[in-house]
Image (cartoon, rainbow, N blue to C red):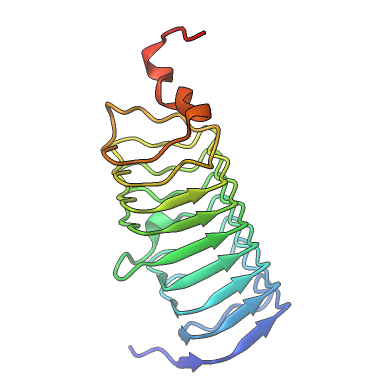
Length: 190
């Protein structure tokens, strides 16, 4: 089944909890101040799209494709990105709330998280090589069997990452947050 192709459109202040987003391929579209909370975006493709001030809380993302997509100032609480179509999955997050979201078992190399809140977010078994967490709150975020090689955490805080349970070679951390790497060892540093 071929989906309709929608290109170069702007969608503003639409409540998709009342009117479903048309199942289609969206190319170079902008969504501003739209509400997608608790909606089904399953099977929809977004290519080079931008979302600004949108609410995706508890959205359903089964086989949704995000290819070169930017999220700016979006609320993505509990978003199950792990259910997305992983083929050519590329996303950037700026000033977003991603608490309780899941990126379990995804390949997210070179992903930018800028000024985001990622409390209790799951990155278990995720490949984050060469990504950056710039000024992000990572309180209770899960990094378990995660590839964080060459990931930049220097300006982020509240993380707890076990070097023995993750691939960590070349990752960058700040001296002030180094305790986030040592919590599992239950050592005393004064």
